[in-house]
Image (tube, rainbow, N blue to C red):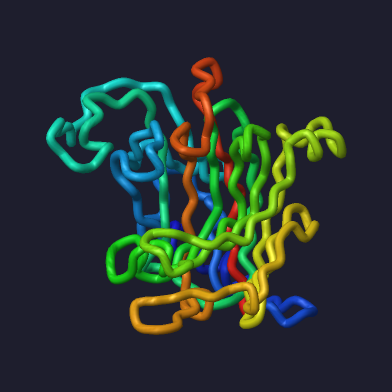
Length: 284
């Protein structure tokens, strides 16, 4: 049976069920077929590109295995194919690559306005790891609108926040100054998570966003971490007032290393694996 038929039958069986609160599955990737990531749903980033991070993004580091999407960060060195010491872009001025990873997104393929977004995953927590499950407004990845006008929702990030390893849940929007964002941000320290469950790092967990017209709620294992309401958001867009959270967003999954937030990289922790069991989107 082909991959397309298996996926159709699975989605049909799930979509036939509507939850008690009126949500119905509209899209998911269960990552149940070993091999490459489904290119009908996902795009790949390439090269250096974000937040002075240390990894080179490439397709080879994302693959499906044993029912999970694996985003694997590796120590591997090679000359930077884009090296240009005269470039105005910091990534091009690096003469070599020391680490690789992957960043995938659903831009222009799967974009959603409102709904319940759910991921079940086990995240890497070694030094330097910066995994994320997040969304950006339509057009942000490939032109048409620059960040942070497009709006950003970090359903899950992990890194040392103010020096304390933490899980973060954030909502960010344009504050009127060039390339500057206003943030509604909440953190849960890893120490607090380990106090409740000493095996937390070894387990899969569920991150959820409930995005409605009037609010965004971000959960970790059913515990509300961050609620952002519309009266907190004052976004200035390209032409007058613009609320990026009343427009479609697309999904991103990535494992960054180091950079402005990731902290010192533990070279003894490779390969680092971000293991994603599924990503699902429900709408009313």
